[in-house]
Length: 103
Image (cartoon, rainbow, N blue to C red; front, side, top):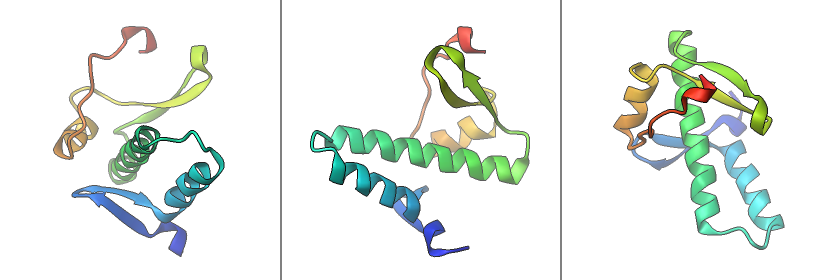
């Protein structure tokens, strides 16, 4: 694995890859209105994405990608009582009630 896939730990059990850090650095450099709140949101998205990707790679059926037409975006879908929610809770991420319209 190349240096782009080097893990940068942001907290216990939470990491981003060096390519994600470079992406974030480029946004900060270009967007003068970027705030620490925006940076935390990006970091959280990267961390969650990496955890879900790791578990999907390990277990194969723990999540799937879905297209959300109303917002033209891709999202992960996974069971509320599965491995992903359990692992995310271990590093401090909890989810509010899910919107049934999406599932």
